[in-house]
Image: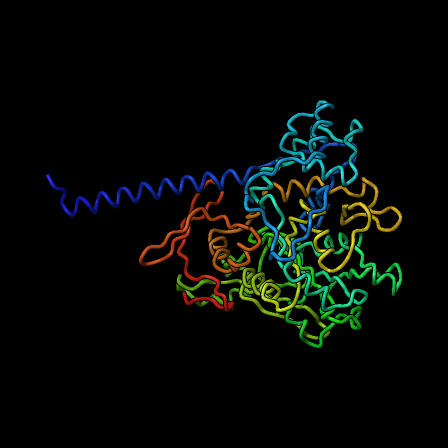
Length: 481
């Protein structure tokens, strides 16, 4: 008996639905495995490394290093392993550290060798009993978790133009300058470079203190790159040639970044309250409580209007320099696209790589600008003393463990965000930047129908569906809803 046309259609729909549910279940399982919760209890370890774990949001903390310096390949746009999602094998030094820990009776260290190495480079002496305890080890994420979040290798964009910079700028007149939005780790990057890099030719002409590493680019580290081509300069950098400065630009996972912006807004302002921040989309409660949003959306009843929360950046009150952006996603995308599309040499790196691959990244940036290392690589902590004490006593570097936990496990990235916020984030954070830096949205599945694009978002224990009303376009505009 031949099947009817109706029967064929019904069977096709059933098979398609089964395949859809199968793919969705796989994606949700992957998402859930990424969000393992690590509970931290108070303790009195020898160095009290976890004292400041409740104030980690804006602290750009100690970084990880590789033992050996890799060769620089100026012919590639960025560094990233083809097997970026695979956990790398341990180095001999890491294997030795794991063995030392196990010999002291510490358990569950097999997948934490690189993290133990980070602690030793921050001053923890694994050979000395009591410097590393079981509680510290158990609180740390595994290296597999770290590589699941960020890949197994650092990402550096712009290495292909290093030769151009060194060729066009005479060595004694070169500068390395720091840039990045608020809360992305610019101070950490500046300290890493100042303590670990120097341009010898410049020091020979201008003295030992003139290492060629500047705290910021001449047009201002938080200013958009478009100001490089204007008359604007910072007060302390007015005599620094802009085209003699190699910008070192640091970015950060956008969800982690937004969480920090809610804690420390700096020169940014946008309508929000502590119960709903980050907020890309104004909720009905927001519109009722916040005058700015009530004025903008109070009379709009249509559900088809995307009620974006605008953000204003007041770069300079003195010069009345400010920028308005349609949302957090637009601000991040417009800011970093200025550097991404720059027609001059610049390097772009991730904050997370400064934390987990600090030496490798620092060495490559230093070499790119024509600098050389200053002895053995030194970790830097925001709270560390400078000068003769190098990076400060161990008791002053209290937030390292918390930083490794916070950024290694990926917890709390989506705190206080609504379903609409998460869907809007996928629309308005430029995918070119998200993909280029190896970040990811909490999106489990996208599929297109004839009538709309559908986005499945995993939040906690529930999955929600939203329509993809508009995506971030290359021209920084929003498609019509």
